[in-house]
Length: 147
Image (tube, rainbow, N blue to C red; front, side):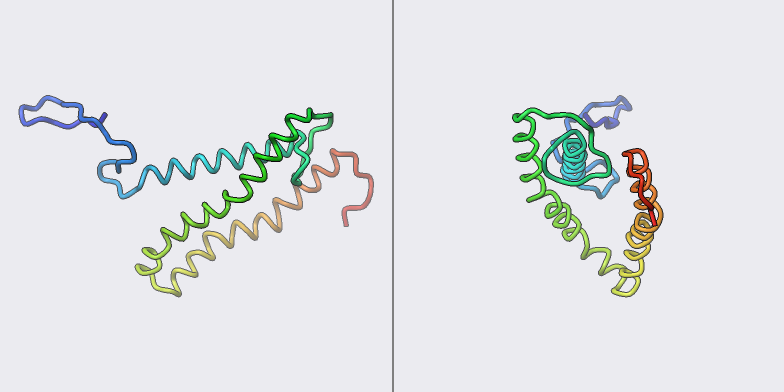
């Protein structure tokens, strides 16, 4: 319910329609909801891989046997998720790209994207991924050289 002031000074609750934009905001709330749902599915997929799904590769895998039912459900979840999750993320990003591109121009737009995406990518590739891979291998019993 949205709250508005009436001419007499009292507050009046107004119903809010689903997917409506919040007052003073230019966000499309239903797109945020879709993105939140997709992120939740990515997390569930990685948890399924961690706890025994026969598909996929992840830093850590829990030991033990999983039931056939879990394996089938996890493979369906991961197969269906892999077929549309990234594509839907890219579609949403592509839908919102023309406005900042037109506002900034090609050069500043690419520089902004390199800063916003390139710096985290390099940080992950150079620092985070090697450390997590080392930690997972060391705690998984690997005895060889890491060099």
